[in-house]
Amino acid sequence: MLINLVVNACEAVATGEPVSLCTGRQPGTASPMIEVRNGGEPIPPEALERIGQPFFSTKDAGNGLGVAYVRRVAAAHHWAFSLESTAETGTIARLLL
Image (cartoon, rainbow, N blue to C red):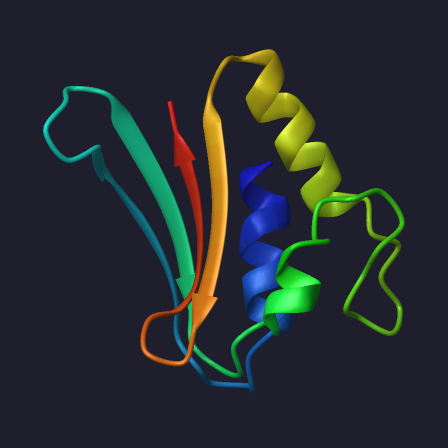
């Protein structure tokens, strides 16, 4: 799961652009949180709504199964997964464990 999120983040930015992996606690709780964050162009809202649906991809060579897999594994473990993307914050994939 984590490798998939990091690879996706790296593929979405230009060479040399930073991608960060951060671990910590969910604000106000003791529950762990993992975030993968990148800059670059934000994902358009209409595409962001569909990411994670099997076979939908914003990449030319993508198969649309990576984020669907992440969502499925997260759900099986009762974790929360979210994906947000804005020009101000970049794109953030977040797992709340």
